[in-house]
Length: 184
Image (cartoon, rainbow, N blue to C red; front, side):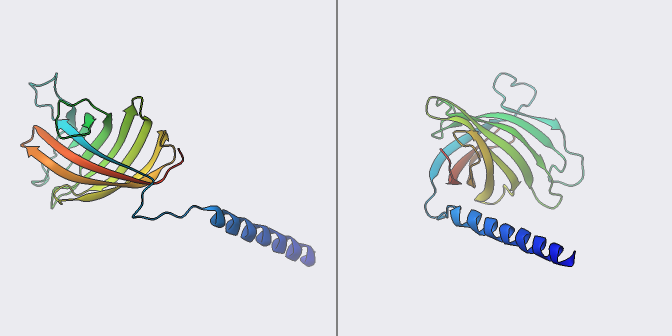
């Protein structure tokens, strides 16, 4: 009986070891200096203020809780146009749909979950971006954690740079998206 358990264990761990080295040997290495796809876009956000229902692209659904001076607890949903240039009136190439919320009590800090939704002749599908966004920093790197359509199972980095802020009404973010795992 002990010999059978020993033999079974030996076979099981041998197969496991063989499979793990086989999978690792087929993994495609990537070079951070050479992404397989790269996009540079501009996100335009127009905050709803009670008077601009036709133009608003985002709205706070939970207002700050009053715990500090950094909008702690504010929750914003959005459906923002994304353009190739800085002009808000340019033809959108995608939309960013999702949400962000303020979670810093000692500084302005947000956490976000966005889908960059493409529906054009050039690209169809989504890129999913989520993570910590310390938006007072000049540049922020957020992970691209997946996608659908032309971007199925992709991974990469989205570097955000705030281009313009006009009070609480409008902001524009330059998004430099570099994909390192591309399957299409």
